[in-house]
Amino acid sequence: MKNYVDKIFRILEKTHPDAKIALNFSNEFELLVAVQLSAQCTDVRVNLVTPKLFARYKKVEDYANAKTAEFEKRIFPTGFYRNKTKNILGAAKMLVKDFNGKLPDNMAELLKLPGVARKSANVILNNAFKKNEGVVVDTHVMRLSGRMGFVPVKLAKAKNAVKIERELMKKVPQKDWGKFSDYMVFHGRRICTARKPKCNECPLSKICPSAFKV
Image (cartoon, rainbow, N blue to C red; front, side):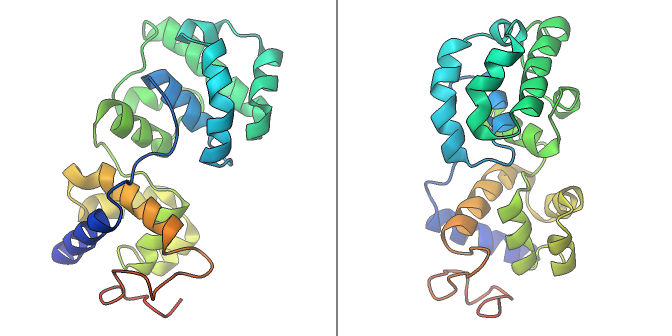
């Protein structure tokens, strides 16, 4: 499995050299906000909302003191705006109160923040702090992990992100966890799509167990 995983990684690395997080941000807290807004929303739509949002709220303290109604209106296009407002403003208040206004750089403390689960924490740790404490498991990573044989297809279809992450952490070298997710997401968007994977165009078709079978 180790050689297989390494081969997959190297091929994806060559296929998607531009793979990276799609959300726009200029500091750690802006990344947290963007990640929170991306729940059940496309990155494209989030990136349309955040420029004006980040111009209005420049510091963590600005979010902590923000008026709920105004903030809800500003993020309304991203959907689930009430819950997202509660989490973002709540996280800002906690950061000011317990972390001197700074976003923590470790999993345990990030998970204390409202609305932050392992996926969000992994995105933040990898992209803001260049740390690999886990593997980002989104819908693309789930689907491709099953198709490529990294995890049982049944587990992938069950969409149990925690269990899938544990399996991937065993099989993918820790130094590659961050880029592995980036490559898998880009491959899932461009080639190994959900409804009709483009196996004829896929550079993995000769070694992927699901090639031409989905």
